[in-house]
Length: 332
View (cartoon, one colour):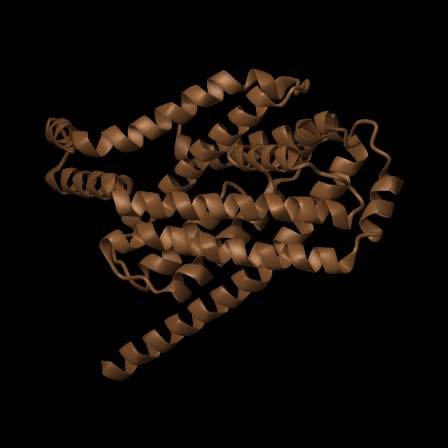
């Protein structure tokens, strides 16, 4: 049986079933006419502010990723930004977080020949982001005197997973000689062994970017700025819809959305985002209807912002490729 051919349809089925199940539980008892009323009555200036903050955090995310990429190369701010925008846009409309591959190829084909290293930095960045989110969510759940339902039960397992992920990033690069020794003992052809060793080296090199103290501090500083701005955008976005979202609720919502995005999902995170929003906002006094209205407007704004910058980035990337191809053709 060819498992590679089955993996994609199985992943799609799991994502669709999960999205449908979570959407069913999130949408129970929702007054959809009220959802439309809340969305239609949004304050345009407030939404513009939210979109502006979204564009700013997109730039900060690009700068943060560039810190890791420049451990092996010199990537310009522009290329990092356009690739990041295209990647986040891809994650919004494509399944299985395919946007990570989009931004990886946009950078590796322009600056770095080793795609594995670029992808490793992108994935490691998201893992560290997840560790930070777990810490934020755990702190809020442990300190806010509210009944948070199933969220409260996730503190310990999420904390354990977060610590395990951080430990892997710290320890795995130090064990590279062990990995190489194990690969040398595999009974495979020499070319395949060389390819596996190169892949392992690039993956560990991507993790090792966090072993530089200055780079780590820069990454954590930008991460703090990003999540503070995102929480501000959440509060402003809620106010634009006539909803009061406290700061702790904003941070918990961002953590829930970030962690939910790691699940197998359909394009646009349909279902998982709705379930995360209802779970995070309802304990703070927001109605389920208000939570659904907010997250739907948030998703539309996210697609608009990343779609605009991501589309420009993809057009610039395509133009650069055409110019490069024309140069190669004239040179030959």
